[in-house]
Image 1 (cartoon, rainbow, N blue to C red):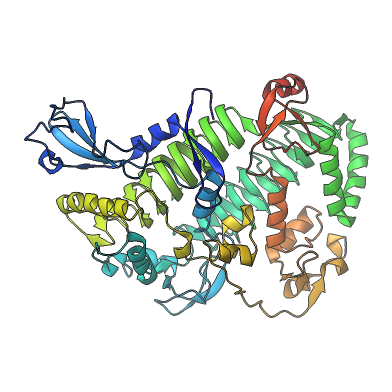
Image 2: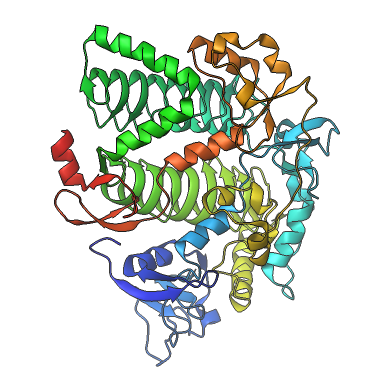
Length: 620
């Protein structure tokens, strides 16, 4: 909470029973983004152009009239506000404060997102084998992306009339089951890059998730405008990088975290403009350093050779040593750079972002994850160029005023409770539409019909207590154990089923290979690895799951003299996730000045944590 906010209500989460606060700024946001529809004053009990309030007093032009004034603002019964704008009357359908705490809202949204689990299945249109994030045991129709974007597919033919005798989510789920879905979330600008998800403008890429404008990248997650990178996470404009997290504009980096404009280095954290460094942290514009100590070029090259020999033998031991080295050095309370009035972690070039994680170039955003160029948004995840939106998941390229939505692409606006709409506007409860306006449950209406029917449906949703809720996880097309929610908030099968989630034990059949080799049997020297390793599988040293190398991987490891990975790509992804601080804030004191701080470093961790002022004095 920021200094200019006041807590106006403490609520109990209806899912986990934890307490969470609602502030005056939160309520201002919910009211600001609440949808508005035209209304006749006579429909609200008024007389002519000047309706009367409950005391039969004439209403002035600038006033608003709560329909149920006896209710507390933000409560379910206080929904409609009559607005007079000059001579026009409208109704604002207020979105009240949420019933779930921020963590449960995040979990709810992410239970609709399967990024990394891809399967072989058949396209229901062409009957050809395709790759999809919908497993074959799911009942949905799935189309190849090229077919889905073509004129061969138009989801508007699956329309339904709204039934006022049933609740909304039941009807939505009925439509959800019959509308064909796109096999993978990719645009059509893919060159030799079919095995990727949530991606666009990729060339020669494999298993890249949430990626745009990349070339020759493999097993990356949230990587943008990069070339020749493997196993990187949340990184921008990099080249020849491996196992890097939150790095930007860097070259030849390996096993680095939170570094900008660095090159030719190994195991760095929080470094800027550094090159030829190993095992360093908090350095700026340095070269030939190891363990933060300055060496001559000759000394550095001798030590580097020893380091590379050790890297071949025991990479895991080096990673452990690096973590222990970081414990002895100071750490900034959070990775927040060039930002003003922001809380949580991994924030850059942003302003007024409250409890945001991995946000860039954003302003007036709260309770959101992985935002870029977002303005005035709450509870929105994985979005780009999003404005004035609430409680939604995944947007790409210029969207405005979209609430309770899942995945919309390119120039969408005024969407409510819609799923995967492209170039759409003024749509309500629609699924997988392209270039449409004024649709409800995929049925086409005129503008006048739409603006008349939508308020009636909202009133119905208010009566069934659905209006202010996101889609229930019970209608998610994905099982909890294959979603992003499982990565951040893991549950056992019993815990998931006991709650509101679904679970599946389905596993993709593993392709036939000549032989499965235990990771411990792999040679340490990359040049001792034979070419026919590509025809074999490696048994993960942690999970025992077999995995294969692709040719481009092997070439990359040889080029950079790196050891073959001994862990399954899924395990490597979890390993990288564990190197990031958790999505949770803790109360702690600055080690230097004793000031109270909010940080993602828990008090029981070993790091020496400084507040921003003390850190800047020490480093700069």
